[in-house]
Length: 115
Length: 113
Image 1 (cartoon, chains in turn red, cyan):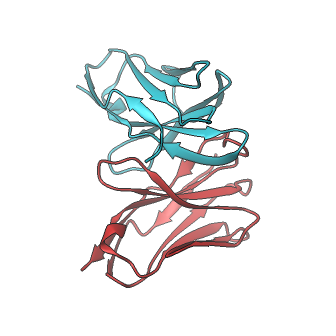
Image 2 (image 1 turned 30 degrees about the horizontal axis):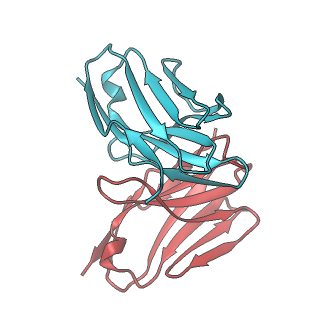
């Protein structure tokens, strides 16, 4: 089955700096890669996703890049703010439509924004 | 916030007991997936329900079972509870017809003693 590795496990950056979180996946059939943000005691929140036919996607201060050949994808957050502090999870799926195979998650990155 | 709801919020059970967790999907979504999130870990896929049938399953034993109802809500049942079943149980709703995005509910915190 799919295996998703995520690095680093903890990332501390100064407010206003950029943060980058990297993930690799093992199943070349994976075609959908979402990123979730989970604040303490709250539900995972979908913040951005990318499909295998796209190399990069941006939404305001966040962007995701995908390299299918190398089987890795990354989350980039620019101009970090205190409210960006949370645990971020990458995930991969081979599903189409509703994601019949389910999402395989990385172990998470605890992002700390230092004031 | 998503329109996905779960009940109960918290639950304490004893080893060997059985538990039922409930999930109501977001309006317009017909698919429910269940995940187990141990402390400090990412969610792990248990199974998915679509059209009232199991539509995919992760690496969980048969004592984890589920149901989906005609209104697309779903139940997760766990028999013969073990201490390692203590976790946050999340459901996520999605639509087989309009996209792959999965939106999570707030979860049920299960503690097995």
